[in-house]
Image (cartoon, rainbow, N blue to C red):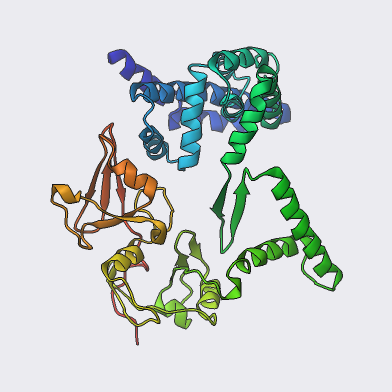
Length: 411
């Protein structure tokens, strides 16, 4: 144990702010070539540190017998999104078992962590024997190559190692198709069909491009890129069900912002903050339904949900969803309306169905909560404390709808 503690202490010493500050100060005197050399040396050092991180994550996964909850714990500890955490863990497992030579290239600083993840992904479908064979082939092909070159080399080597399995891989990849949303900044987002059948994706793009070009030829002033995006969204929204089809979008906006007396940002559930001007534009739309939400002026937290709207409410269920806005696990942004309503203290252990004990958790995090070693506690102030199997504690509090105020608005 003393040796392990010393190892961790040494790592912290190497990457300490004092050491880095000393190095950064010396960089001010470098010429162009020396600056490039310093950047290369830093990249090699980062690769070596990434090798250490992959070994540590591989050790954690083996110690926990590959439990799926390892991904969530890594996401917490490293402050990364779940998808990246999953990639780190799966790569760590591959590097420390099936891809030792690629791990060795990391140790030498000849391949970075991102490149190593490309190798792990390309060989994930191979048997252990074939993966080791590909690892040996790539040892001489991928040093000092960029990530795209590594991806192509690894995919080719994997296909050559198991030609019969290539068709099974294609079938598996097509079976993993899904629709994802990526939130951007200041009122934009992206929607993507991942791993769709190539013939359908190509046909869909051809149709979208054809309609966009027809509009452009008809005098449209929007760019072709803008037209393609608009046509694609119009086709999705005007598909089955027609234009009368509607979906609920939850926009949280201070009344003073809505009335134009201030320009505080609003928040769209699942997306994040948007400028006040855009929020007012959305809120003034012809199909907008406004709701009254009472907040505590000192904390900005939701106290009550008004009943003046066009459709009946579902009482407590809706209040908790509006209050939480998103899944309560830190780092998860699944909108609350698509989450499960769950007891922070399990019902069978004395939990109550009340707003002081109910929280929103997406289906995956709902299942994670019930795994051994995970503990969830909801405080009286609404703070959810999550304790992981390794004893790490993380707090989650629904952000206030507005900054705390000392006095009520003047109306």
